[in-house]
Amino acid sequence: MSLAENLAEIQSRIHAACTRSGRDPASVQLLAVSKSHPPETIRAAVDGGQIFFGENKIQEAKAKIPLCPSRARWHFIGHLQSNKVRDAVELFEMIQGVDSLDIAQEINRRAEQAAKTVPLLLEVNVAGEASKFGYAPEKLLAELKTLDALPRIEIHGLMAIPPFNPVAEKSRSYFRRLRDLKFQCEEILGVPLPQLSMGMSGDFEVAIEEGATIVRIGTALFGERVSSLRRAETD
Image (cartoon, helix red, strand yellow):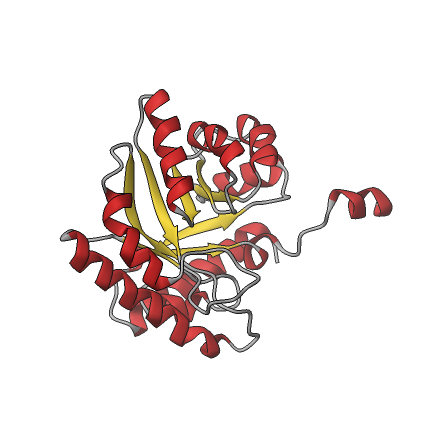
């Protein structure tokens, strides 16, 4: 199918998942995961009505974003290293995946220098996987007030990547765990956290049923990614 057809299909599935769970489809934001896709593809997606995009590599984003339509809005969704924070603060309107107090403090410092406030999501390692980044739930709860006290950041919610499973239903318990943790965070802070970023191409409908407000979708929208090396081999 074409990009436009893929986008329409995803939006239809988002609508159906919201209907099943008694939610307003407008409460779910589709974040198009555009890593390794060129500006021409982003432009086509924007022409089709897609506005929000997620990148996970700072260097790629620095080169790509200036070539994309100005209407596009960008979230950083990768693991952020301290030496890339300045660029992330400059390029992105939201940083997802903040997984330590050290990184949050560096974001705060760079945001102060830039005279701006940075919305962010805190990443949680919901399954305790050694191969993944993210806060352990207990550590997040322990550091939450310290994080919230940083004046140049705004905590908007949580994000997670559950263990891969080809059966979407197997991810439900992890999504539910993140949602419950968000409730705990709200109790500690005394304010609502509006965002839950969870669910990708293979399981976003289950994530929506469990409360996702942002779903990060790449393959189902753009198709399989082809690396620059592979493109060179096949050109």
